[in-house]
Length: 155
Image (cartoon, rainbow, N blue to C red; front, top):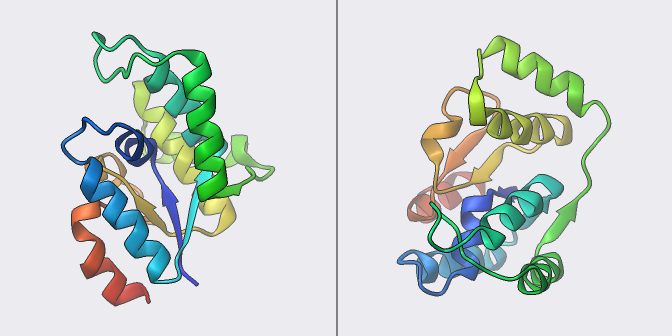
């Protein structure tokens, strides 16, 4: 069974019914389930979601939700997606990645997600920010628009 990790960008669009990619995201996740894929989330994705969800709507990318609503969203994500615990060794794996790829600034969070993926043996990341992950040959990042094409190669 292929394991697909969801990036925060997917969780945000899964939740935000006003986002132009909401319907595409929902259809994509349903298609993954129909194809017997294990659709997963991690602690980092949920923490990043909280940051976006509770950021003021006027702020870049913020949803302007209350903490209570964000908790409800996270509980919903935990009910519908498989939750993967972060493995030991994350710090060393992350340090290796940021050093090897000369990661700077907020890109450290992408490197951390890749470190989790490497330690868990996960190769596939569904994201709306594919370009942020191109430097990491150990994973394959793809967008919901590429779902059918990717499913042909992994199922």
